[in-house]
Image 1 (cartoon, rainbow, N blue to C red):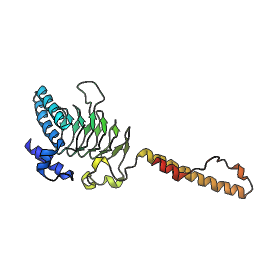
Image 2: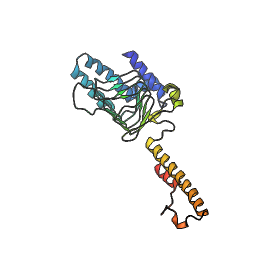
Image 3: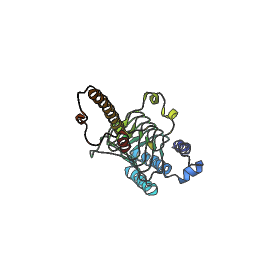
Image 4: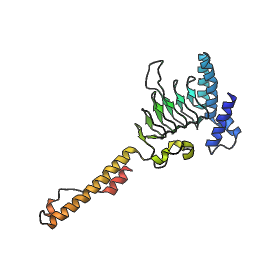
Length: 251
């Protein structure tokens, strides 16, 4: 257990630029305290001291503002940054090297006992502030959950989930070639070029509409030159299509 705690403290020191010493992490970081107390409560839970385990969990919640059910499985080097308002449910599993920010809920959507109600985070997952991951599915290795996202379905490895309900942004081929360690740590689940897929789809439609407008202009010019139509025959009426203005609205 003490080896695990040393690993946990070292991981905080490595991932948080605000941390200046091991002593500061051990004495001042509520996320570290919550994980440390959870390891004690989880030991009691696994050895059938269930009420005592819940007391430890409740004391940890009171002291840190972080609620972790003693039955939840927490891996090695898990970093809960700031942590206030974090809730991790009974059947949740958090893999090694995961990072969870304040206000995150790893919650369940089922009221049945004895079933997997809470999510599983595989190794290296980053869950941004305020995100809600709800259900008994898996968030793949190295995935990122954007701040305030509401995730209700599985997230593939190294993908990013954003929005409410969350939409999945698949990594491009170049990104797939690199591990999360090579890509670097992603604070708050924010990555470079993290465009919402819905926004991308709207931009594609706007580009297509602009191309169609240009084709119509070309066709009308040729028909007018041939004397086959007049100015009033242009099928487009009203305000002209403004690609730049609509793009700004979408962004």
